[in-house]
Image (cartoon, rainbow, N blue to C red; front, side):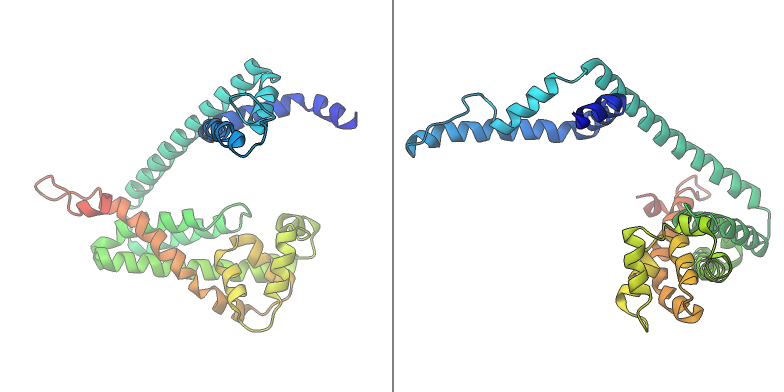
Length: 289
């Protein structure tokens, strides 16, 4: 009775989940029903040969039949309405986010095109540090922006390949500097704050596991994997809360260049694919492949 009361109270939320499931899992549902039909056909053929009686006589297997019966009890109009809303929201968000990002980066490239490379570097570092101080923001958008903006401005000074190398180095140094600030300032000085610990999710199972690995002496493969592949802000702040020494943590973070370099290259390729020659042809056609 308690379960039924809870389900009735959250009926609207359940319909929303069902609508999203229909949208996201429709191909798998169709495949499941097709396999169920095939399975039932094989049962009808093989069971009599083995002298066994088939308890379920329908076209679908017992499990699939129960699923279909449960589906019949759904509020189909409400579920399908939510499914349409989810689809519209996904398409709208995907398209708008993509267009907004393209327009913003185009504006940023145009705005910084007349600036000195070192002035643009200062802007990228300042904006990157601001973004790194926000808990939900990962580093990948920062590296991607560096690959576009620094390469577009630095090509005249360093050449295209030198500008890419420069963008990788700046992004690498920016990541290490952000880790140091996050660990020493936020984690070290503000780590006793309840709000900081909540942002880190200090009592979650994942963070507890990271605490055990990060507290191990020396630089282990597990520690490097967390420092490089873990979420930027929570991991660095957790190191500060645990009182770990900064230098070993920075050394363990150095392999992050394996993530930074491909991301910077991805951003630089998007810029290179738009460079035209004097004959209105693409100078780097392979970059847009």
